[in-house]
Image (cartoon, rainbow, N blue to C red):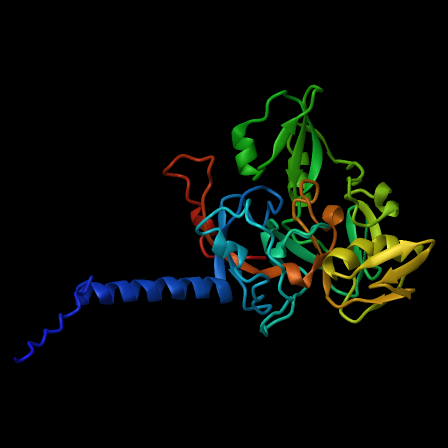
Length: 360
């Protein structure tokens, strides 16, 4: 009796051919965008006024990652990739990968605007730390100090960019500041004291000189800032008496630099060695042990940078949370892509004069 052969059923395609091509193209486009943002450049929206004068709140900045060499993932899954899909607050900690960076086409230079993860003296993964934009004012191996608001690098006074601002007390004849006055002079931040006819402005030195010449202005005087003392001071006990305008001097470590671990340097570099260099350091009866070995010196394995905000009296920067290790650098801010003023109406919200503006 002949056996009947069963015909093979043709597989049913879930998607029609043209839909398969569209899906393939979409997946390729998404993957290309992700890789491009990770390896080449990214767009970041700014908030806050710490860089007021050079960058404004509402600016969408271009961060070029390839300039300094793209930083490779510090964990199996980069933090910003995970954040695209879910919150990571409840996820278990992931062991950090070694710090590696692809070759770049330029070195970090003084006055560069850099985008980086905020240094922190705890074990939070680097790529999960808050990102910021600041200006590089001192390079690895430099000695930086601030005296009467003037920055000194290796003993030489530096000229600030024209965008740098400070707080000024402004005494006026009237008790009210006109909105047109603020707009004409580009004043973004202002607060009034309990005293009559006295205001605190955030101004550049040139703006302060111009305002002083106005008939309704009685006096313009730079504010004297308070001490920088914080709960976890990054520079040791001697920094307890430093202010935003009177700071240092301190040495900026560089890769291969050897420092003698006396009482001063140990106080200055202890937390950097522990949390940034990731070495087990312990002090017992004035003896220093690194990774269990008695020593009186340490050789740094990374370059460090001293960064500051252009709004010098209204910013959190290296003066308060310490030096920035190269492992925290994400990229260079090259310019402004778009800019929106959230305080304006819908029609006037776009800042047309800032579109494609280069960073300075």
